[in-house]
Length: 433
Image (cartoon, rainbow, N blue to C red; front, top):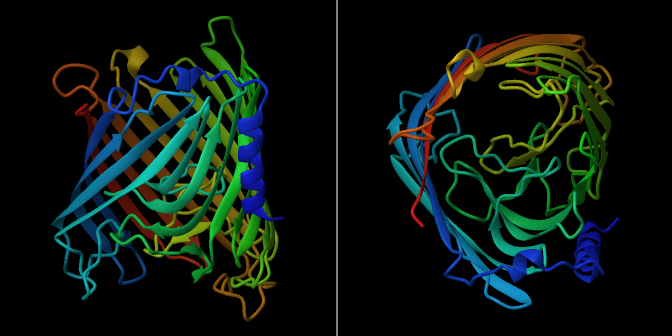
């Protein structure tokens, strides 16, 4: 399958759709008139206390994000420009603790005191279909770049999204280079996160469709050149259990199928990964039970960039704060609880906790020359996460948010080590235009 041809074909179908409404483009007021500038101030503290290894990481930084989005020129075909500038400042680091991948590294391995990067993208719009080229931030189940440090990651390439049919989103992209969240250059590559090897270009095509107000379907296909091809299916069912919808039941099914591609630089890959999560909501309370399985002789691997950090291209239910529970042959269960304290008189405040346990990791059948050989046989591990978040509801600090997350991870095996993790993040969004 040539994913680039499929992307162009999918774009062509959306542009030739006979039901073109031209709703979005017809409402365009102009390049300048619809322009906007949004910003985000983020303060991030991370502490990784590795219990067995001398690899503790503790850093504190301040970030600033500025994003400019022009409007579209008037007419049947609209043109526009997006641009961004990101800044990061080191507040605390050093002493061998610069291992959070939150800040840009200096030549001696320490974290730079200050760093900045910028980029942009050209865009065009016909009806409800947009096409962009430049530095982008794709967010799909098979290619998703993270924004969980100080500066978001970006990928350089072409992407389109189309909403010509009500309830249907079609999207695709092809990317040839990247910039990780701890880098300022734009010439990085795409890596297999667990295998730690670099492949070629990255492409995807897919979409979501709302079959019914309570039923959603997602289908995607992707290719990381010379690493793997990956296919994804999602089915989400949301069933209200009373007329006021204060009680509801949600079932979320996720499935990935990965097969090696081209030169197979990460070795032979034939993995099926799936998860099922059942969530019962009762007023402010939500309880979620999830099961996840990995079928194959390799772990379920996903995207990393050249800065070394993992990103968000894994929608499996038990992917969590520290571990992903995606080892070869692994089975895992999780139980989570979330409380929204607004009905209890504390609007903007929420609390959540989750416990995940994984077992049956099979490291015996991994070939000796495989980059995944670091798994032991019969590994088992567990993780407990706790998070508390608050968003200011009104006043001069409206939308200021604070979140505190703590994770405890323990393992009986060789693929990882015990760690206690603390993350404190403060964010303030603002608009300049």
